[in-house]
Image (tube, rainbow, N blue to C red; front, side, top):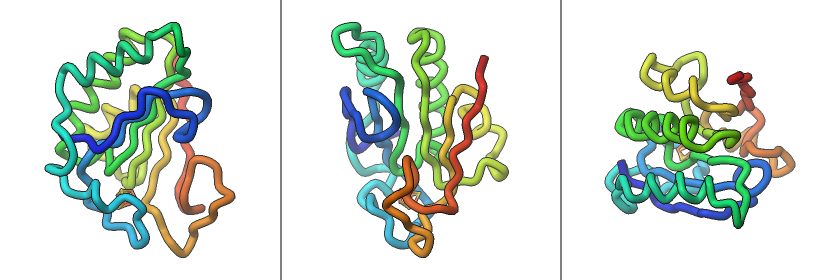
Length: 156
Ligand code: SF4
């Protein structure tokens, strides 16, 4: 997997102070996509074990308390991203007690493959669906267009 950006302290992509990872790779080709440079899975930087360790360490950093991890892109559920993202979300739940995980995908929850669903089983909040320019609304919170749905799961 490759990633485009990692923000160790982010107050924009999800509630509270968070760590945010923008991965590479997306097949959805939404009209009006704000992040077309992330579509190619080979764009950006190689996501390494060291990067993953850094995310875990940042989430556990008590000097700047983070509420959780946001995963965006690109698409974290792009087929080539599923295995490394599953590993990451499992580690966050194992090693970062109390931290939530938000994930943005262009896929619909109802259409996920079993492999993609495995990732979602570790996610607290999933925002699904393609960005639809005709339904775009800047007043929406955490979504770009009104067709997208915020699914909140009770993982307890
Ligand atoms: S899912 Fe996101 S990154 Fe992918 S094309 Fe749509 S808006 Fe762009």
